[in-house]
Length: 240
Image 1: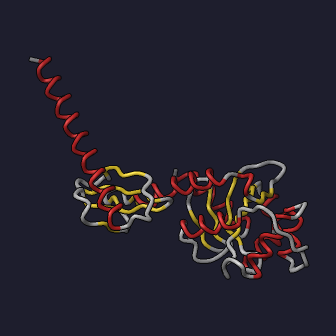
Image 2: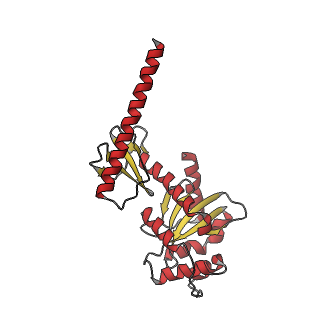
Image 3: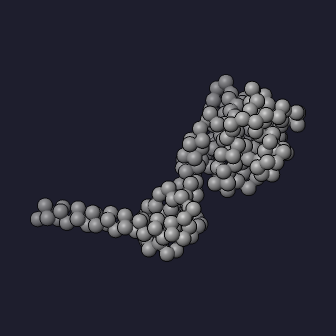
């Protein structure tokens, strides 16, 4: 009897997996047909029965199991008051940053590292300049800052060209500091990751600069003084 029950349980599990797989394919086919330019990274059941989680880059969408309806929003666990969508977005942001890699970032490192943040910056942004003018304070707090470029004026703008010139400079860190002080940086061109940075910023839905991404994948839009940033990062550690 126990053997029969075990076989029945395995059969139900296999059937459930088969149905889920069929639903995933239906969703992929439906989205692919109507939105062929959208690259779907994964489709899997969400925490809500009949609703599937669709990952597109660093974004999360939701779809009905028949693939007829697609929607975007926040999935909240009311009992635990947890934003399930944000938690998964944080994970996808970190994966996207890892894919870019530190070799395509401009990094300022303290002697003793305690925290790491990635910051989307615009050379001509006032608050970006204020943040960088206090770089020694961030270093004193043990914060490694990994810069990515997001010239808000867009590709081909003066800010964009400055970003490219900074990247192509012999000493990128010194060039970035000079540019942030509105000092002239030699105009140069070379292979650079500025377009990749901008695409990632768009994927992250960056609206302004600076935008800080923590090592947990959480976002703090805008300027934060070193001490306030440390407080936020310490709070983040306790929550997670």
